Figure 1 (spheres, rainbow, N blue to C red):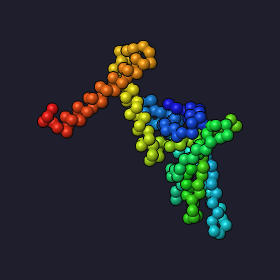
Figure 2: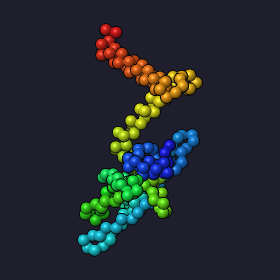
Figure 3: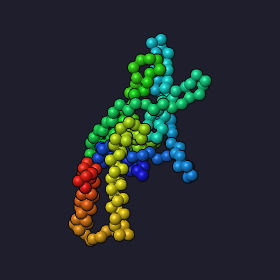
Figure 4: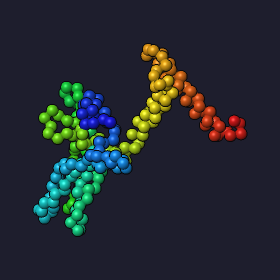
Length: 205
């Protein structure tokens, strides 16, 4: 699993969006239930028309920004905020810095406030941005659309491993191994086409 240092290195070098699951605070060894990492982030102040000030506490949970909502009985809970966009900006040294922008609701009824969270770290940062802030958090609607592609790649790699004798390459050298992989891909695609034709035309099979 990629951690903050890995994510920071990739983002700063490439300016790309990195999509991966966040690290949990803890995982139950029996049930597998996750306790997500939570940390306070910032307090946003809004001024009402009568001059009074109202604050909104924000927290990071599983890589996504939340705001605290106080219930009528005095208890509170965290509500995920809407991600508006991602921003990647180049640095003069050829590296990149990245931000994710959220909308913080206004408790006075006015317009929401946008909050830009930096997802990359600088050498002097006391807060580990890359570890706690994800560009596309797991709870974000776009996460499954993007991360699903990685899952397919992992299943294909596992299938290749399972067909190798003792999970060792059948040949020596880059070109020979590339030929082996191409042959494996052709076999998989041919099988998929045959099964699809059989499904479409069962009587012709």
